Length: 468
Image 1 (cartoon, rainbow, N blue to C red):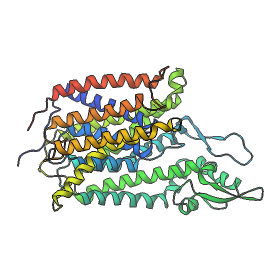
Image 2 (image 1 turned 135 degrees about the vertical axis):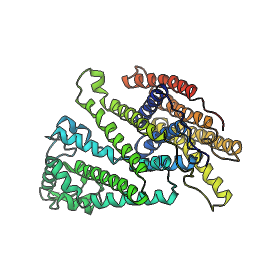
Image 3 (image 1 turned 135 degrees about the horizontal axis):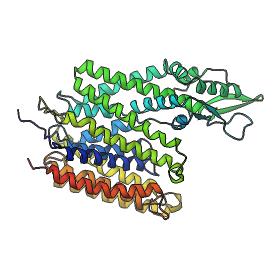
Image 4 (image 1 turned 120 degrees about the horizontal axis):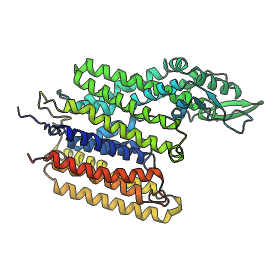
């Protein structure tokens, strides 16, 4: 059978350029994720979409790549993105209570072991993108996977995650950081709550925004879990431990159920890459000088996390991508579906990949100070998105995919979408980055933008994709 892969990263220079571009692209996008309009799971979707477009151009699997795969893989990573809340600063040896004890005016702090902060951050990263790792494993695997196999893996992850969260996670966290658990117990006692941390975790189904009955000086009241000292940290860390366990269960299941050691190795390495990427930059919170770095440690941590994850992802995949696929198999076949439905799926995937996120960012970045501009700007962005989608449908009416044949089409998709996001970041709304005086993070972003453009162009010349 004709091989459906191209080993285009064949020399050391191309490998270095590929790793550097992956790092710069993901670093910039992760920094955008921390900016107004790009946050939360939606921001993670933007980050992973750009990274995926780069990867499918760099490592083409022509029978496997299509827009529905890119959309689903980015979505899979977005829905599992966790929250760090109080965890980041534990590496400094200090844990903030986040909530006030009755009668306090200043939030108290307790001493914890910095090692617990490091371990918790590693676990946070390991459980951050397990479904994204699964999707990449399916893309580079020799085995044939259907859409329902991805659903099966998703079900395993969530089942293991929720089972562990409400059973073993509280006990494990008590072993890991007993001071943090005692802080929450002290907070509950201060507010007259007789229930234990574990029983509250189950009662509130892990939702730290739930209000519970409390009493202070005989006066009944309702208070959110996250407003009780130690509550936010306890709930968040139990969720972190549960996600890490779910990721481990998924990897083991993947290897046992599908007998796919190569795929399981890729998924495990992606989880490990995310663990390292989100933990190592945490050292920035220990920095006290220079002042510019100390004052912007959070933003530099965001950029550093993305930079390392993009770098490690390319390095992890390179050895596997150089292996020829033993079987020429199609990923997520749509056999049996009517032709019109396949076209609808392709068009919706295009809109979600290239148009939906920019429109939402425009809507979010025009804040209340510019209410009159919200509707016109959103309508304009929507019209542009619709026009681009119509153009795509007409231009690609046969294949409905700008990613597969030839790879040169995918070569343009990544920088175009990245440029759109960067233009929104630099110029749109009161939160625009290009405001004088330029912050150190903005200067880093501008330098990264220029360097990415140069390196991407050099990489494109070296790879010299051929029409097939």
